[in-house]
Image 1 (cartoon, rainbow, N blue to C red):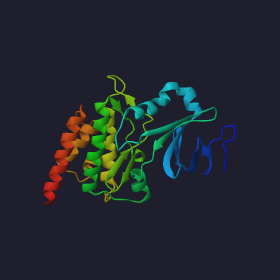
Image 2 (cartoon, one colour):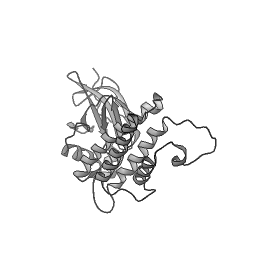
Image 3 (cartoon, rainbow, N blue to C red):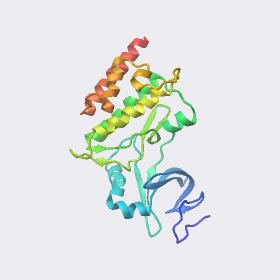
Image 4 (cartoon, rainbow, N blue to C red):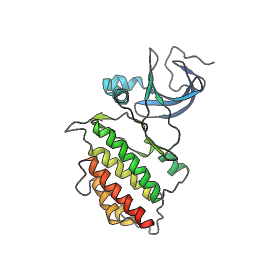
Length: 247
């Protein structure tokens, strides 16, 4: 059994005990934290350690993720299970969500997303965003590595940049922009370039007029969406039209 030394180490190895949780492996490292897959009593969890330098530099802003996750309850968002705080480490334990990130699926597995898959993922993500916005929370980081797919389930993770909405700095439109770019990655997964000359996405991708307008409004090329209700309605109409055309 590996015990924690008194001095600070950069990366904890497999077998190391952190507050009773046994490290299985390193998952990844970001600007503010390091994530590990850990085990306690035969059950898997995610341990997110906050870097000491990040705490020193950003202070209370770093713990927004913990506060926000503690205030919400949604099956597609990892729950806070526990916290670890001592002289050597400040971390919290998150519910483990099985599956693969969209980033791993596209760039690791070369997965090609069908339109049906794109609509299912989009509808579920919009549902999560709607839940957050109804509670005045913006995620601000809806990117490929932060969305996990497990068959029919879609999970949104990493709330390190999440904030409460205000009318100046943190507005709902930032989540719409991230969603638009994420959907573009899904559409591009099936794109085969035939022309060496680069074109903008709205000239390259084979999209319906409604899909194109929807994406432009998400990203802000056209007048941006102001409400997730409008985003949800328009995307449901697009997916409904697609399903009707398939019959």
